[in-house]
Image 1 (cartoon, rainbow, N blue to C red):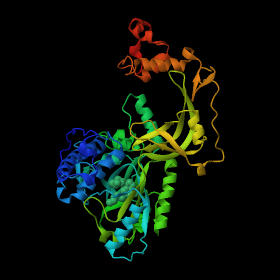
Image 2: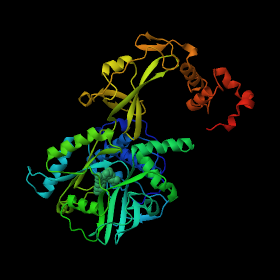
Image 3: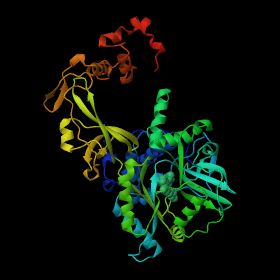
Image 4: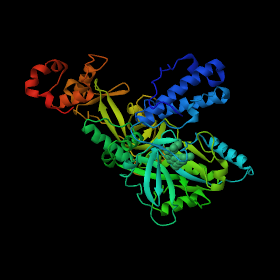
Length: 518
Ligand code: IVH
């Protein structure tokens, strides 16, 4: 547990590394030892980037894959489990930015399931542990799994006294002054019957729309933008100046509790009702599922609704409702036995196609670009996707207003892989490819599968694209002259052709570049 606050950046393991490429079953003991040591270092480093720096360098899916490999190797070679194994801890140690706070009861993580079968296995394990009949139904609460950061709120006599982040699960950061600025977090409990001492646990997160607005404002102010709402929420909560946090649109939703001086409830569902009566926000989407069919249906429904929810979720959580069973089930190292997270696949998501825009490239090729309802896939907010060409639109049979399936693999540009035809709204409309260039109005002609603007250098879009190509890494590689700068310089008439780039210094007397923003 006692790791340095800032781990060393590990040597990168190339994807074609002979040990890394081997399936776990094929590893020798010696190789497994090497791999476990490397994974411990890599995971610690990515935990640090994610939890402390709020700047992850790999996608959630890549991170999950590292953890899954670590777990699989440890299962095969239990005697090789390292004292610093990632499976023994959650999150990352707190940074030195805030005073530390030791949680009176550890803040655990959740076991993940990626299929109905894995959820069924969870129910099976619970039945076996409790010695129940194999056909017995187990009631569980079903809840959205918010993609934010967890926080513990300590109340004494109904008054908020301490707020702390999860940190490594044992010790977090004391962020009380910042949490006090979040409107959703009650500073005083309402109603009656709350225990003298109570720890409320939940998630701090940001609405998708607020995240996009915040990023716009950051961009305008020349400040760093955030990769996704989760990072924006984490970065906003962990500000040294609480007035910065106060200006950020943070939300809070409760999903549980920690220590409580009295807790007379028999079920989690009852406890949630009590928390709600004290003014603690809980999700209106929480449900009580009485059978496995209901569990499956809840997941399907949330999967369908995911794109239209105003906030990001990365799955749903099922928790055994009876609290006497919860106590008996207890926990294993890092996760409780009484809960499971059913996660969405990391690289695909459904969302709504709002419009199709045409982009004109350097050679005049017209490319349709899908404008989407923002959706987070693998930790990145996707708002547009490539539709390649006219033939692709026809092949997919996609219409504006359709619910589409978007795939984003690694750094590749997201693309639409399918249409959910059953969800087509009555007002969906087909897309008509233009006969004229949307930028310069010149006639469009077919060139094999590609449609091309015939405007040539008369077309401003083609000119800008050629300029962009000219300064790009593949051509003149002019540092500091990127896409945005070229667009601005072109729009303001400072550069119309490549030769103009080289006469900028001589012409600066009229242009005054130093006074331009950015
Ligand atoms: S219960 C001991 N319920 O997911 C179990 N967690 O991957 C504690 N999360 O650290 C977690 N929504 O930050 C629970 N409805 C929910 C949740 C939820 C989001 C987060 C939480 C937790 C993480 C585990």
